[in-house]
Every structure is written in structure tokens, then in C-alpha cells.
Image (cartoon, rainbow, N blue to C red; front, side):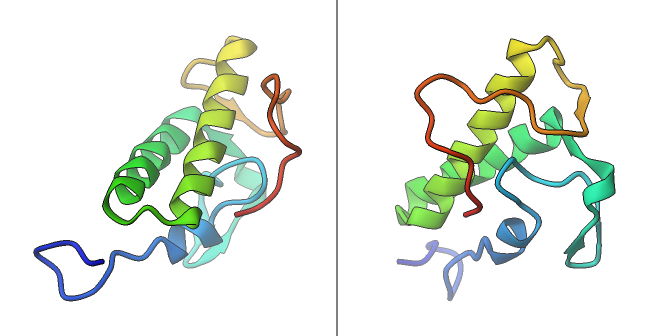
Length: 103
């Protein structure tokens, strides 16, 4: 399935490359994630929106996995009161979530 205005499916490959088992890395050098920069809840919230919209268009597993990771980071940040702050290390996992794994 493709988006009606495009000739090919929208790819999430770059977003997946910048994502590890905890969430979207804040910065990258071109396509290489810079893990020293950590994660931000606002970037991960935007990635969550992209993943959900992509899932609605295509229904694929990658967009579902990326949405799950975006929700995980948002939940963890909210649980410890970070709001829109930066998380440089993994926070605690939400209840009933499987072990962290990269998409």
C-alpha cells in the first residue's frame, strides 16, 4: 500500500536507525546516532505521532514497534516527572511491558 499522493511507501528506515531499545536518540551525525546526547521526551513524542500515522496508513510491524517505544519513553518520563526534559539513561519500564528491544 502506498500513500495516495506518492508513488512509493513512506519509509521509516531512518527513524528506526536512530532508535535503540529505549527510544529515539536526540542527535545524530548524518545517519549515525550520537548516543552521548541521550533522549528527549518531545522528540520521542513526535516520533510516536509519526509511527502512529504510519501504522494507520500501512499497518506494518515496524511502525507499531516504534510507536510502542515512543509510548514507553513518554510513560517513563512522566512517571518520574521529567515532562519535556532530557533522559540520558533508561528510566524505569512501565508495568506489563515486555523487555526493551530495538525495532
